[in-house]
Amino acid sequence: MARTELKDLGEFGLINRLNTATKILQPSTHKGIGDDAAVLDYGGELFTLVSTDLLIEGVHFDLSYFPLKHLGYKAVSVNVSDIAAMNGTPTQITVSLAISNRFSVEALEELYAGIYLACEDYGIDLIGGDTTSSLSGLMISITALGQVAKDKVVYRNGAQKGDILCVTGDLGGAYLGLQILSREKEVFLANPEMQPQLTGLDYLVGRQLRPEARTNIIHELQDLELVPTSMIDISDGLASEILHICQQSGVGAFVFEDKIPIDKMSYETAIEFNIAPTTCALNGGEDYELLFTIKQSEFEKIKTHPNISTIGYIVDKSEGTWLKTRGDNEVKITAQGWTHF
Ligand code: ADP
Ligand code: MG
Image 1: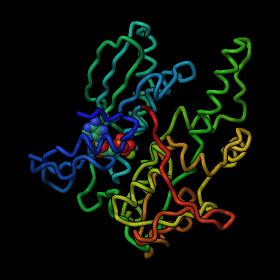
Image 2 (image 1 turned 90 degrees about the horizontal axis):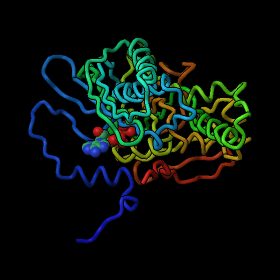
Image 3 (image 1 turned 45 degrees about the horizontal axis):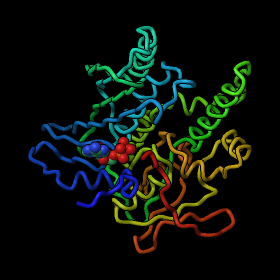
């Protein structure tokens, strides 16, 4: 049998290939693989949501600049973010750890301090998990459960021609935070006497080390009686997530470069690192903001919202997915995303 290399498929190709054989046997499995969380129907007025993520030392985090407490917080946030992306409210988590004897009990207590802080912030309960040894490094897997009213669940596949594309917060900051932390690590390795130069850069470093899931926006959308037509959280970069919504909804999109929200500090730091600020937003990832679409008739409801930007609109699939640049050019949106293999 021919050998296929992982890099030839990529993350999404691999998931698709492994999952083609999935059969749904349970009537309660309302939506399985393919969205930010699975959707389960046990009767009643609510769906149950389930999402899981795995974080590996050396791949997703580097403990030389990632304080364990922040890591615990972030591991919870990334899962809560997937529940929010279904328009849901998180309720419980389980936490599984693989640890080597390199870690002390006190170090693991720090990790848990972050996990408990996140549980408090999001109002959720830690209800179990698993602990095992690892030959090298730390691995954390968290599963989050959540709930959503059946008529309020939002998938990636509901965007329709004419809908407005919206994004919360600002983008690119987490990627730039990572660049700053990597730079300081290099400086430190070259000269351990050097102290990190992080003054004034706390916002970006915080975006990388301590992301907050946008549960607040989910509550606000509820208050506005606004149910998006589609939604996804931004874990891999705006470009990749726009393509997920477009592919799954069977539509195209026009996005305006000058509408993409980028914080002033992100902008200036990108320039300093010689990276286009827009590239950080499109391909940086880990911002954990929400990307969603709404019907044009709902625009009034979010028009003046300080944390929601409208960045483009949905078009017919045949028109493709394009970025209209500041210079009035059209650039095809492609996913760079993920190259772990
Ligand atoms: P997200 O970035 O929102 O966490 P992913 O891109 O990781 O989503 O996953 C997309 C979908 O594929 C999800 O429904 C997820 O549960 C599913 N998935 C990912 N990896 C696997 C796997 N190894 N086996 C089965 N399903 C998977
Ligand atoms: Mg997601």
